[in-house]
Length: 281
Ligand SMILES: [Zn+2]
Image (cartoon, rainbow, N blue to C red; front, top):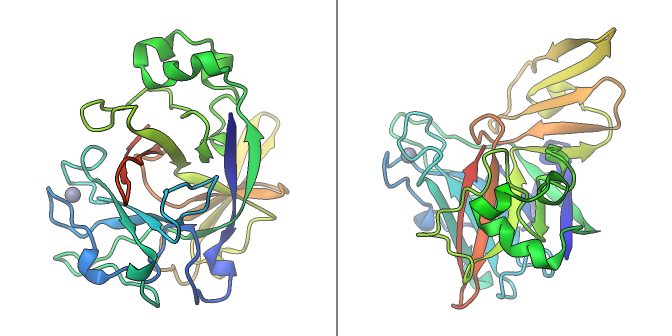
């Protein structure tokens, strides 16, 4: 089975956005403010996790020009945090406007934007999972009995936990699908997003990206940390982590319970299709 890993670039290092781009976090492009989802439990406006264009075979919405939006409740005091507070909105091309849409403020006047990374491209990979084992990725009991080399062919390395297509690489908590809302089939796995994504290159300075940049190095078995705080934090909070001298860095762009992964599923029987998702640690 084929799957695709996105490559990312930091929005803070790009020219100001002037068109629709597929991205994680930040503010959506051309999203009608009247459609902005509100959490069913705490009534706070939700926070955007991703805006993804139909781009088969990576993101196949069965809707040319369609755009998928993922939102979640980022209110740590809300009952829906981690449970019901995940929304997906698919818009047709003609519903997308022009310009960035601001998140409506909550009752205290606050916004909860996520850090912003743009998808620069996709790298194809072959999933080593044999076809006869695929159904085991949708059943917790069967999944628990899979050898680690099949259930987690790349270990629990979070670099492999953001991908589109193939089978879901579950976290240490196993298959966290709720079959009463996401039954597979008719739902199919679309993509998963770990809260830390990786960008090629050396970690940028804190003042350039407007967030804390932490650099670590291993010295004689001990990890030494250097934390650099920005003079002026950006409105889309995130943090950057890198090993000293490494040629890639991690971007913690959202808070799925400190180290969680979002799992996104699609039912393509209707037009537009139905997308449901949840996150788990
Ligand atoms: Zn809520």
